[in-house]
Length: 246
Length: 246
Image (cartoon, rainbow over all chains, first blue to last red; front, side, top):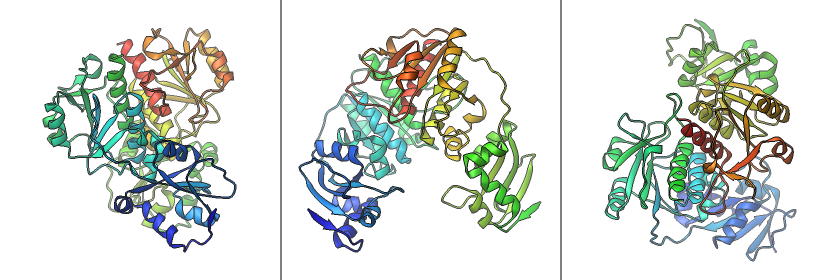
């Protein structure tokens, strides 16, 4: 097995470039941490190489590189001592057709983005389009929060307004989520087979420009006027649509 | 206005003790960061003092202490430059009676805990009991994720099994959330007026000991066998119960 002990190693320096969006975009690669995510990436045929410590044994048919703890700590973005990190390539983009679609506009918190991807897969929203202003879905914190769901959905950066128009031409009902007085309550909506939800930024919500092209707006009924975490709100929307079609 | 410029100031050292659970438990105080949370704490009559930079003006009837940036950075747990931090006291515990109750067993992620508190308030689950193994709800990250909801619910540390039994004696249906084969689907349940949900740890779920005393187990129907973030799962449970009672 190949061994790397020096943090000055050229390959390791290249790998560390994947800590930034620029680096990930440039090489079309990203990193995953921990046994669970490495296995998920392997099953999705995205895993190219594993950097691991001598304490870890992984029975996967992929190149393994034994690393010193200093090297693993340098590759890892976690605080505690990392034991295995996978180098992956992003999946090929193929045109997909999915009756349930999620659009994310300026969702900036990695935890929320990952949670939404995880819930989307669970409720059959297998196509996700995100705006340029969203956090990069291959950001390690997003990958972590998605718990591997990122490898199983179609996810693609897209301009929101034109994507909404394309979905509408394709017969989708496109619902923006917004706490407006004219928004319909989620639980009163009859969802057609082709439904898309659009979710906005954590602080400012959806822009008027995006709301303007949506077919309608929905809001979640609450006991008192509060607001919900966007990951929760989006998940409740997707669950409601999924259950109605059950 | 009182001014503190030195990070060696005795009062500042005392305040920094609130970064740990031990410190918060000892003095019954906690910190909030940012204008929004400071205002929420003020409205809940929990705010005792504000530490702020000269760039911030807050029109609140509470003692304000002007601090150097170095002092604010020392008090703050955020990475970027803090501009205002509130010193608060924990609310008095009074016995409350609430028909919808949430129990959290070993929920360890601050973001999940905060999100669950936020959703609980939104859906009228105004009493929350949490086990000793949960993250401290006055942890700054929990306070942040709860977006002030923490100040408006009754939240109390409690032993799970005895609390479940007490709720049952009081007429509650206590539902554990668990992905078991015998669990009922959430969308097929008729919720009585008094309903309590019990949520478990992010990694290991609910213990058999706790499941054993619950009246029943529920699971959320999904498109494929995946798992959901506990904050999302709990929020969907509470939303479903709330909407049925609408």
